[in-house]
Length: 181
Image (cartoon, rainbow, N blue to C red; front, side, top):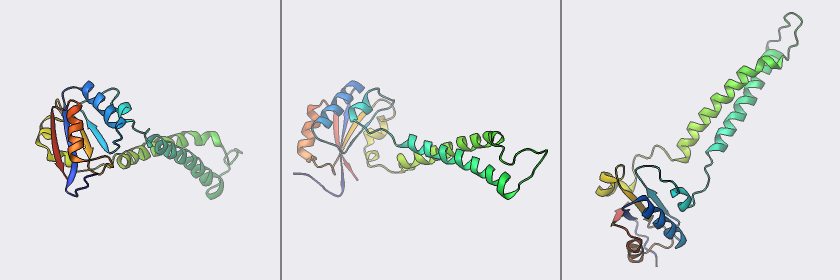
């Protein structure tokens, strides 16, 4: 039976070390939970692998920006020098593509960077000024210093308050707290 209380976000468990957190994350995933997240004060190697996170879509956004910028810059210069303002200077051809390369390159870099920044905001849902885990005083006091946390959300299909709490205790959690939405 799942507990889908609208005011409950889930359970937050604190662990003593990154190794215990990684082990707990693996067991949580293997037990069928999918709506969970892990928090550490610094990057922990192997944590994203243990969570089985999907590869980021951000490189595709950067590639799209680069292609649009490069092709768009090249076409913009072609239109300007061949169609809109054709000047025959010294018998040179109107379509002198080697001269277009520096501007096309700069447009590639510019739009790739813009798409990358905007894509980063979209993928990370930034800015997110509020998250329910900040309702935990322990999380606020220790998450960025020395705390290793795992939260399992109440919207997960396997979530049952009592069973999930006892499961997290069995994983070696030092402290478990209910998080209100």
